[in-house]
Image (cartoon, rainbow, N blue to C red; front, side, top):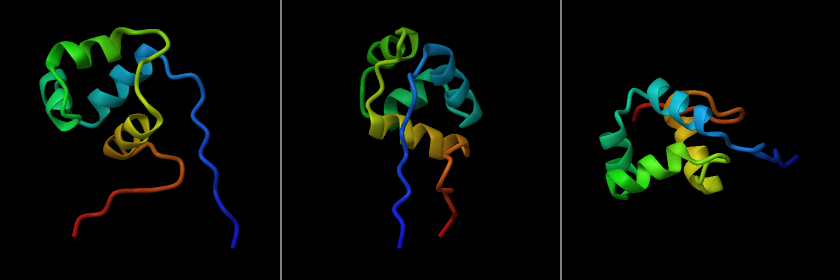
Length: 75
């Protein structure tokens, strides 16, 4: 069995915003989803490079349907 390695390149603010929009989230909903304040999310989204952790970035990719290895499916 081979292990697929996911290596996020440099995360830039426009990627974070476009992924949030693709996921259908407002900044307010994204802040709720990631359990941070609205201002905290705005900082993450505005920073270059983005301040998302690898886990946060991968979750955002999943929510947006853009993860290179996984997809979300309904139960």
